[in-house]
Structure formats: C-alpha cells, structure tokens
Length: 130
Image 1 (tube, helix red, strand yellow):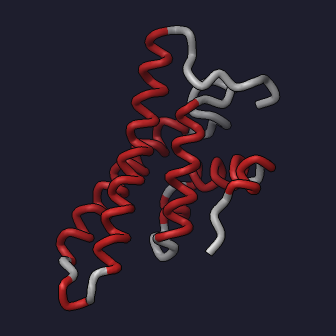
Image 2 (image 1 turned 135 degrees about the horizontal axis):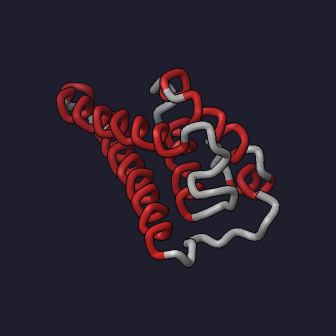
C-alpha cells in the first residue's frame, strides 16, 4: 500500500474485476440507503418485507466481497484501487447508518480490511460525524 494508487489497473481483465467489486460495494450502498429510508418512515407505514429484502441483498454482497478479498490486504493485488475505496465507503456507511447490522462478526476479512483501511489518515479525516 506504499505505492501511489492506480484506481483502475491498466490490464483490461483486472480493470473488469475492480469494476465488478466496485459494483458490489455500490449495491451495498443502494440497499443500505433503502433500509435507512424505510426506517425513517412512521413505524406503521414501514414495510418489514422491503427491509428484509434489502438486508438480504446486503448480506449476499458482503459474502461476495468477503470471498473476493480473502485474506488479502487489497481487492486487487497489493495496490489501492477503486474497488478498495468503494468497499470501504460501503462498509463505513453500514457502520454509520445501520450500526445494528452485525456484518463484522460474519465477515472477518472485511472487518480486518475496514479496520486497517479506515485507520488511514485520509479516511479518518473524511469520516462523517453524527
């Protein structure tokens, strides 16, 4: 992680893999936002099945990211990419807006990734506050 980041690798297939990982992270954000918005509605108007459906999407995407990351430090080789930034944004959004979702206990590689990447000074400086 000491090399300057290349957000998309030059090799076409590697760039596709980075984009696919980014898309999984974006899907987590989309589903988490829908869960958050549904939770802001009056309780009587909330649709529990809609929340459950979105939470299932989040869980499937987290499982896919966990598999993609494995025990590696980054999603693509040893250099920071768009995949890493997108994944960290999604994971930190889950912590910020859906703190009761126990994703860390089910996805230890992602939890370690979020701890390590989230401790970077640029990540700490841009983390939202309540």
